Amino acid sequence: MLQVIQNNSQPKMSSRELSKLADKRHDNTLKLISSLIDGGVLKNTTLSSYVNEQNKQEYPEYLCDKRDSLVIIARLSPEFTAALVDRWQELEQKQAQPESPLLQLANAVLTAQAIIADQSQKLLIAEPKAAALDLIAGSDDSRCIRDTAKELKIKPSRLTQYLLANRWIYRQSREDDKLGKVMAYQHRIDQGLIEHCSVVIEQKGQTKLATSVKITGKGFAKLSLEFTGENNAF
Image 1: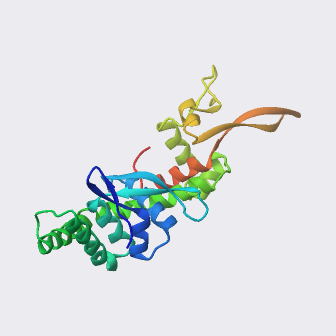
Image 2: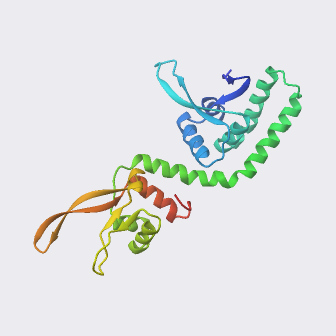
Image 3: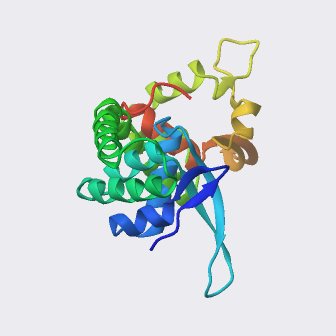
């Protein structure tokens, strides 16, 4: 029998148990739950940890209530929703709650159906967000504005206008009518979205060291969401 976590008499089910019920890898379940939390879909799910019995190492897991577990299992494998309902029914019977088992089962099924219907749009939004998180985690390179625009399949002028309008970059003032040097806002640097780097340029036969701005992997992931219509603002 899989173990369900008890906390202040309120039952909590672990992400490990949900993975076993749905026959899914636990790491994939963790990614899904993280994306649903970011999307505001899950309400009562918290990050915890457990110690592996074999290697005695500590690993992360999530603890969630019945409502959130139904949402998670419906997203992982809808065909296993009945198994989850049965598991909660068993748990609640052990707690000797006044509701009859049949009423509990009916309420659980209705709850699952309502959550799936109400949250369907949020679940669709959560998938590209999870993909973006994978991109952020796996990308350490940075790219200039022109190369970023090329990868986003937009004109460099459009990307530059967006970065200026949304306070990623600004132009230094000049006394003449020429455009000033592009610089990054410090708060965007602190967010890890953009950075300053040194570049070597040739100017009037002389080699000089200049400052340039580049979009980081994290910044590129956010811009990808923006220009594919999956995000409105950051």
